[in-house]
Amino acid sequence: MISNSIFVMKGKSCSSKLKSFLLVTLCLCNVTSCKSDENLQLDNPEITVNEYNIPVSDLKARDPFIFVDKKNQCYYLYVSRFEGKKGGIYSYKSKDLLRWKENGFGFQAPDGYLGTDDFWAPDIYEYKGEHYAFITVSNAAQGILRGTTILKSTTGADGHYMPILPADQLHLMPADVQSLDGSLYVDDDGKPWMIYCVEWNGPNVENRVGEVWAQRLKEDLTSLIGEAVCLFKATDAVWPVRCGADGGYITDAPFIWKDEVTGKLIMTWSSFGFGPLYSIGQATSTNGILGPWVHEKTPIFSDNGGHAEVFKDLQGKLKIVFHSPNEATATIKETVTIKDIRIVDGKFESIETK
Image 1 (tube, rainbow, N blue to C red):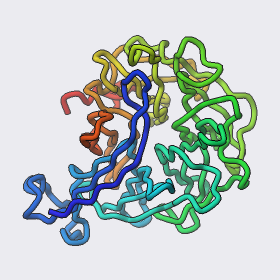
Image 2 (image 1 turned 180 degrees about the vertical axis):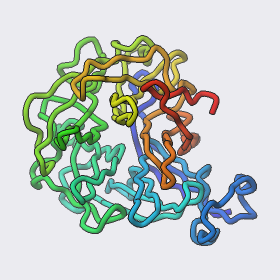
Image 3 (image 1 turned 45 degrees about the vertical axis):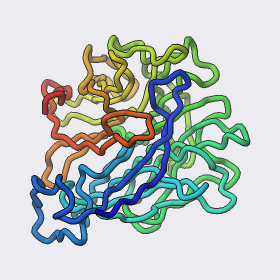
């Protein structure tokens, strides 16, 4: 068995300082050396073990995001990754979601790049025929708080991503707002919005309660326009709990999916529930992105996993991807978890037993 360990980071653990490091490890193995291979069925006969030799069960990462490339009939899994002191986004490629191969850096901070820290939670979107990456970055040494920046690919979904902001502007957020996990939603009028979390421990946050906000993006995604709107606070749902003795109510990973049947918007987001265990909650809106958002009383998943994305696979089947279990220890436990999910009566069905 060949082992290749890669150190990456993301701070989402339930400790007094809520500070952790993401550790991504890959077990690169052949079909005879990895016990998880025994039950893997390859849906695509063109896939060879030698080419796609990483079982999904061996992909250890936090905050995974899967982009479905319909044109090339494949999937890209994006994660954050550091090489030395240079952060970036790294991808893996698959034909069937079961076996993967390394695809390399989609972006790695060049010399002189203003971003030095985090590079968390890369989300990949196709918008107006181009591919964009939304990532959380900061620069602690210069006092630049976390915020979402946007990169644009020059070569497609798997491609070479470059910053679209000026060199002296790290991200889109105001200087006095600490935020993370920006995602893209395009409304029925074709208008782009950024949905993001304001961190519980940032400036100008009341009672250490995290929030989810929305703001319009300029058509070319190079700036925010209009007024930012708070969609909800973590405490608007009944299931989250404070995390740690001096911690707060967490909001992570807001992601919006539109139900084709009811027209409702369904937002998945993560926080800590009873335990405390990292969990995936959901809220729905029948009135567009500005809500009001109605929260379900129980999470979709509450067994110490979260930071979810919902997508349709190449066969049109609805899936959810997240990391589990959520652990901030030297022992690597976070696994890329992909499960089937259904929408029933305009909301996601629980995946606790699926």
